[in-house]
Image (tube, rainbow, N blue to C red; front, top):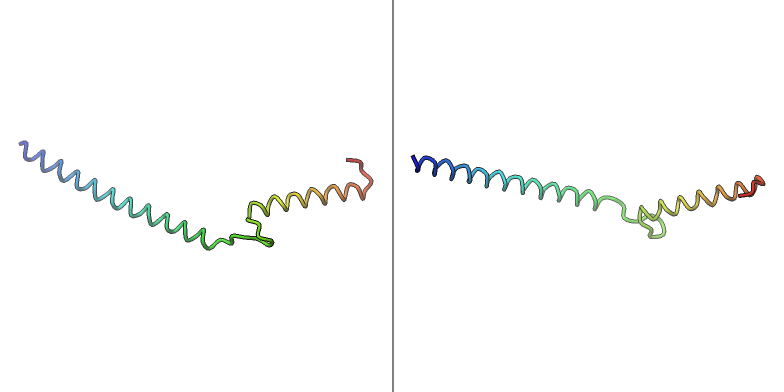
Length: 77
């Protein structure tokens, strides 16, 4: 009876190891895929600014344009 439990537990442990190894291989593949996707993205926008910095600069330019339009219309900010 004890040997049957030992065989079942050893087989379960081996199965768990196989599933864990397959999950780890899948995770590494997914990370490699995401790294390749990041490599394909453009890193810089005109002037060497990154995408986040470009958004901030664009927002600043829009704010300046809004202020200039308000000045041109005679509205006091």
